[in-house]
Length: 134
Image (cartoon, rainbow, N blue to C red; front, top):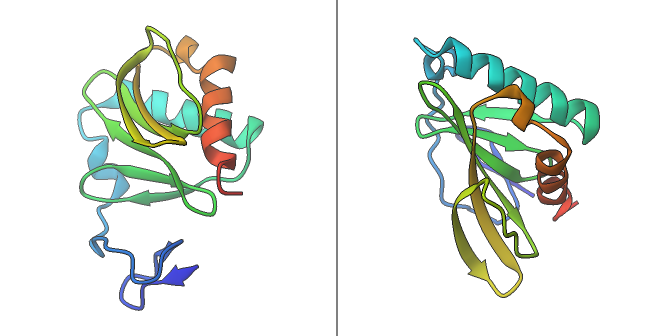
C-alpha cells in the first residue's frame, strides 16, 4: 500500500494518480434527503452483511473502501447511483451501464431508488467487489 504524503489516502499502486481534495460529505446530501436515507441504509447493510467500510468523500463522488475502493457512489436528487467491479459478467435489468475493464474485470453501474433494492442480489455483487482484492 502507498500512502499519499499530502492527503494520507492509501492506494494499491505506488504514486497513484488522484485528487487530494476532500469534499464535506454533507455537501453531497444538500436538498437530497431521500437519497441520504438510501445511502445510510446501503452503508449499514454493507457493514452488517459484508464488512467494515471506510468512506472517502470527494468532489466527484463518495468512495467506499475496504483495502481499496470497491465502489463509487453518486448522490442524485431522488436516487443513489453506484459502481462496483467484479470478475464475472452480470446480465440484469438493474444494471444501467457497464464497462469491460479487462479480461477479468467488469465495471457495473446501477441505481437505487427504493430501499427494497438493497437486497441480497445487490449485496452479493457488492460483496464480490469488496472481496476481489482481499
